[in-house]
Image (cartoon, rainbow, N blue to C red; front, side):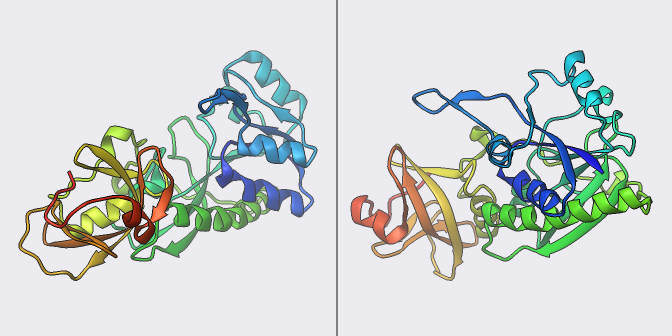
Amino acid sequence: MRIIFMGTPEFAIPSLEILLANNIEITSAVTVPDKPSGRGQQISQSAVKKFAVHRGLDVLQPDSLKDPAFAEACRKLRPDLMVVVAFRILPPSIYTIPRLGAFNLHASLLPKYRGAAPINRAIMAGERESGVTTFFLGERVDTGGIILQARTPIGEDMTAGELHDTLAEIGAEIVLHTARRIEQGKVVPKPQDDASASGAPKIFKEECRINWTQSFDVVHNFIRGLSPSPCAYTFHQGTMLRTFRSRKSDAAHSQRPGAILECERRLIVAASGGAIELLELQQEGRKRLDVAEFLKGYRMKAGEFLE
């Protein structure tokens, strides 16, 4: 079976790797164009391109997915199937090329959390379970017929980064099984129930500021759901502090939300209905540190506020 693989970030690597490990022919890896990145504006390559080049795969990097030249390049590869993992939205002129169709791996249990940030949004919502779904591509994003799903629990303190890594590995197995079933003609896609659908829109920086007036459960889920990226943040006397890890505290208090309750060896902050212990932080322009190291070099006092 000849497959065109499409993906961009690290999340896609285990899926591409497992297909290669099982001797499935990857005719080309399609990813985003190289682009300037960082302070020095050095040209950077996507994770998929780096991996594909290392494995000696042909790489396509179209500027526009609607470019007729890109469609022609795909047709010339004579693919049986397209596998899409964390890539861009494909037009019908592309996903209809393979004789067996095209499927996508999505990091949620569809129809829940359709959209660009399913991992973050699930944890932010306090979900206890997540998973992955493969589905056939269609005109409406993330709505195609479901092929396979796999589930995994979300721990109380699990971050989005940790769930990301778990789902990438689970997803790779599902991608392989999906490709095999399609090749064998054993797939009967299940329609999604739109009435049960929920969205997972992209997260922007302005959404990532902690609101300490919310309940301590919500604040904890917010911090871990945005860790490590795009990352929740708060301010202490005008200084931005990025927060990567937290846990719910049993510290009793009568302070208003945002008050620093303890800041010697531990950093505990009041929230509505309880308190949050911050475990990893980063002062703007400095390194990410565990709280003990952070407090050695950053001054704050109990009774002051995070805002």
